[in-house]
Image 1 (cartoon, rainbow, N blue to C red):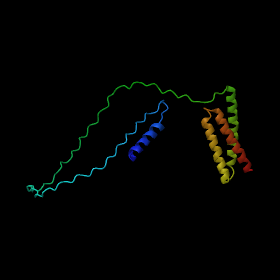
Image 2: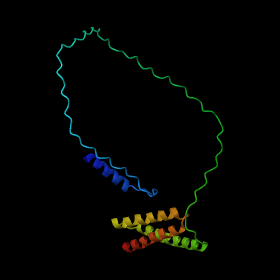
Image 3: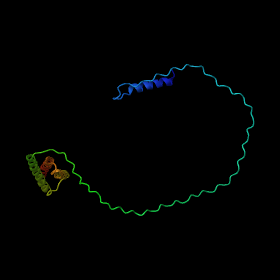
Image 4: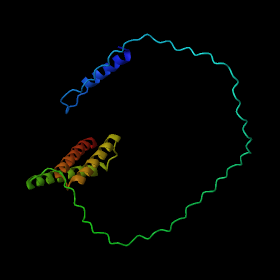
Length: 187
């Protein structure tokens, strides 16, 4: 068996045995390897008989061609501008207003909502009070950073207050804790 047919047989065997799809319940058939060819002794190429040398006929001389004139391409014409077409005045069908996409959220009871609102209001007021006091001091860079963080938490709390009172209360609480830490450094 020659090397190429052996390599082909190996590749086919690996490809058919190794490629299974989960939906295929049976293996792919492997084609039989080609029958070994009987080696025959190489046949020597035939020796050509000597051909008598005859002068080759000369082709007729080509007729002289006149010199070519340069080809001039016609100039491209610009397409004529079309006048703007007036839009047809048709009444657009009235489309209904898009309906708001329902928001996912936690369902809370009215009592929980009141508690969150109270926590939010207390933490927000405490943080605002400390910010007012801090405005009267000359702040260090660390204290100025704390003021920025407190203001950031308060803005976030205000943004989500109507949609998610629990998150707003947590953000305001964090602002309040930072405000207490800032107040300790001011005294």
